[in-house]
Image (tube, rainbow, N blue to C red):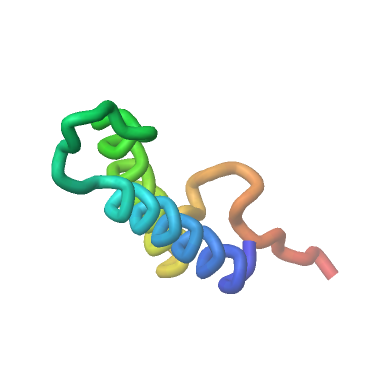
Length: 74
């Protein structure tokens, strides 16, 4: 995978995290549209996605089959 792909994964993680953080707020008297555990999953999932993207960007994801670049025999 190229660098642009990993940067895209990091940006997607940021979008998920920001959506979760923007959905979190003070608990209203009326039930909100987004449950508390959904907000937690959005924030945690977004941060984990950013971590995966950063790990791939620095080249530490070579142990996954199909992710590492193929060496030419020519």
